[in-house]
Image 1 (cartoon, rainbow, N blue to C red):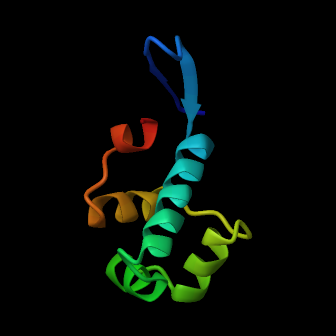
Image 2 (image 1 turned 45 degrees about the vertical axis):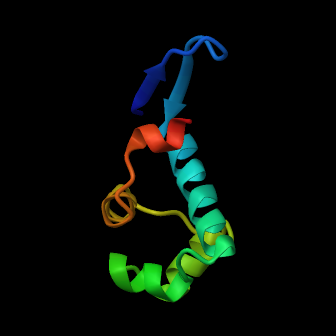
Length: 85
């Protein structure tokens, strides 16, 4: 298991594992879709993930692999730090 530690005045030390980071990424994606910044279809096309699989991920029925998570982060120009804030 990979743990990422970050320090902040309000948080102290808090372990951040892949599942928590992935949950934050999925919440970020849901928010982007809800705001109309991107559609599920467009996100699926740009990342090479099938639209049905992405839909199930966003609904919490499936998980993303580390590779697919990296692809999404790369295509949306997100950094792990963006998920920590």
